[in-house]
Picture 1 (cartoon, one colour):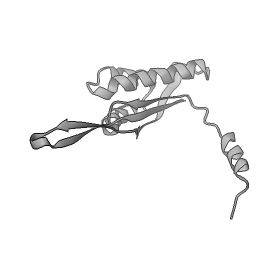
Picture 2 (cartoon, one colour; picture 1 turned 90 degrees about the vertical axis):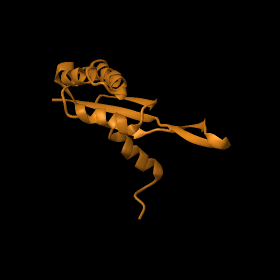
Picture 3 (tube, one colour; picture 1 turned 180 degrees about the vertical axis):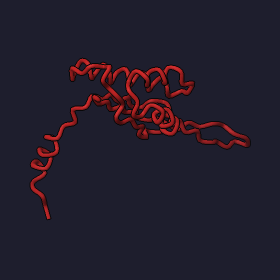
Picture 4 (cartoon, helix red, strand yellow; picture 1 turned 45 degrees about the vertical axis):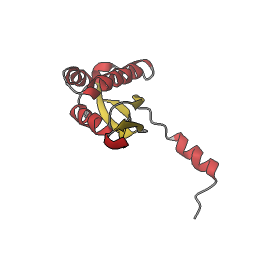
Length: 128
C-alpha cells in the first residue's frame, strides 16, 4: 500500500535533519580496509585523544583521517557553536569509492590489471 505521494514522503524525510557536526572527504586514494583499521582505533574516543592517536599512527590513512577530524571539529565550533573539549567521535566509517583501473605489462605481451581503490571517509561528532 502506498504511504502518500512522493513529494509528501520526501518532505517528511527532509524534516528529520541530522544536526550533529560532521565532515566527509570523498575520492581519497586509500582503500576502505586500510582506512577502517585506523578509524576503529579512534571510534568512541574524545577529540583530543583521537588527534594524539592519529598523530602517532604510522599508517597511510592516518594523515587523511586526522585532516577530516580537524575539519569536523572546525564545523562543530563554527556552524553549531559547540565547545571542542566536550566533543567525541560518535560515528566514523569509510565507504567504497570508484576504483581506478590501470594496466601493468607482463610477460609474452599480456597485461595485468592494477586496481587503485578509493574511499569516502566520514566522521560524525557529538557532545558529551
